[in-house]
Amino acid sequence: MPFRRRTSVSAVSPWCASKVACIRTFTGITKPMKILIVEDDTLLQQGLNLALTGEGYAVDCAANAAQGTAFLQSGQYSLVVLDLGLPDRDGADLLRQWRKEQQDLPVLILSARDALSDRVDGLDAGADDYLMKPFALAELKARVRALIRRYQGQSDNLLQHGDITLNLSSQQVAVDLQPVDVTPKEFSLLTRLLMRIGQTVHRETLQQDLYSWQDDTSSNTLEVHMHNLRRKLGKDRIKTVRGVGYRLEER
Image 1 (tube, rainbow, N blue to C red):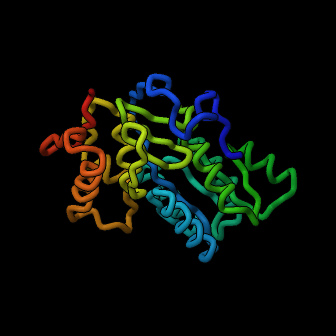
Image 2 (spheres, one colour):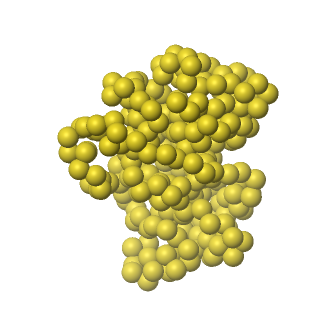
């Protein structure tokens, strides 16, 4: 099982047996749900991109160490998926450089190198996890979720505010304990807002969180997602701060 819940409530319901039992307050700075893939194998890179975007993450892809470093220096990421066998530089050496430059985000190494010495070297270089090829996508996704959750300082799988409950593990949303169907983008937006209850999240921050460099952010796509999310949650829950961004109202 990818997650082990600390509360006995989960044995009764995927959400909670009691609203009071699940209420938590989430404050502080939200880190983006964007992933950088540094992998030179085109087919594997495309497969990883498809799998992770399907989970609701924004994804940028680099084919070598130079591109990966350029992306990392110009964007905000929650996690890097790093191949060791890059064409222009060894992945472990690249990771050591990033750590010296105070890049503290989690790094998941993917490698066909299965020797114990290689795994030890990768972890000593600063990797947070090491997954050997070939691997199951389900395991990759579970490791990604766990690393991002740890990076964001969350040990539980539930976010709740009032009667809104969001399950980070299953990526499900409920209002008053009734399931609500949301898209991956809507799920990511709601996650951001739940982590900043009562605080305005800037439009630019949301766009950088949710979209990769290849996405079109010049149109009103963010407004469309927000409109749909309001329709599903209730129009009075999300407030537009004109010229700034959006805020999930305290209740």
